[in-house]
Image (tube, rainbow, N blue to C red; front, side, top):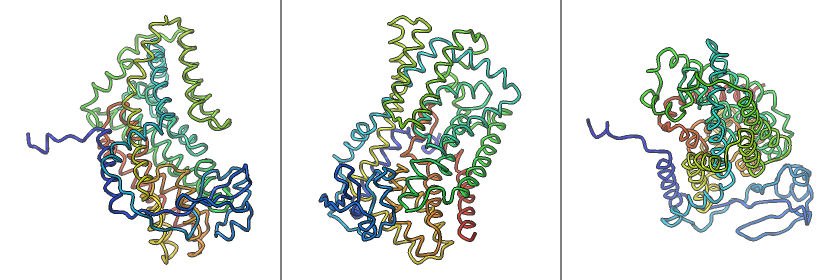
Length: 501
């Protein structure tokens, strides 16, 4: 066996550390710089401009915004629609370099873990809950029941999961929360004779296409529209068409691969891991002998209710990670009571489940650490400045498509969709005026660009998702890149058509 054949793609943790090292190096090459920031202080009813650490208060009036060339109604600040500090156009300046050396490189993942404590805690608590449910044999019984009901129509499962999660993505940005769905749904997909990639694709691609074509998502569509100074309903029709077409493309793509695997398991990209992955989800092999009793139905009802309550709380009640985590902890305690697990068994099962997802939790923290490196190195604003300079003077067709691609690149450095919106829209949206296109098209270019890169973004949650079933990032890239290419073409066609309508 040759040396190249012996080489294996590194683990997700190593991939992220390599990326962190590259980003650290970039902070030595890319000049540091920043835009001035503007935020609203509700206690003093003032607009606070921050420049190089110095803050100055201005009257919270439309006149102040007009003088700063910020075309956003002042009400958007006062009502809380724009709650984060935004970039002020034409204020970029270079700063003294803040290169991140060895100490910064080592501390970044630790800072990332500390900053991601809320989602990490959610993941660990979900791991404990899943282990408790596993101990009751409820998953095994549920899988057997569902496999029998869908026999011969297993593709319906792909359509249902992808569509429902896409609806969550397009309405309230369902993304990090999907981590909770993998351990539950993967055994069901395996029982349907698909591989783990089909399940990962249905969940992750569903979320990604939903956020790419966000319609009423307050964390991207509404924030970006507000930051661009337009009503979020402008451009909605185009996003609805993109959502429908993109979802159809994604579902067809996943089903084609799934049917190949079902007909011949050797067509699976992870065929060599088939036994290993099925071993991780032992319920697949024993499900056929487990009966779905009334008590187990109640367990599954409580378990499913946790997710329904989470979705309702996030979308309607303004919940975030503390409330979501509390729901899953309460669910675990309630299931333990229903099934009368003794105290020692409950604790052991819960801790075992949390331990199983500890590696995933570290991946989330390390990925956040990469963002910390860029923030500490002060290079994100520099990249935004160069991006805005690059698009100046282009014709509108070329401009909007290059902007979409630039947003894909910037997503690596600014993975937060809401953060991207408030930082870039005040800078980029006036460029749309210069070339004669509507600002709503700029919002769509932002969404499509950010959404396209999310399919493969290693600083997002894809590595954490893959780590749940020990699927390599290289396998995911091999599976998804043709789909990303198809969606890129679709997005560019939609953007091009929209500027001439």
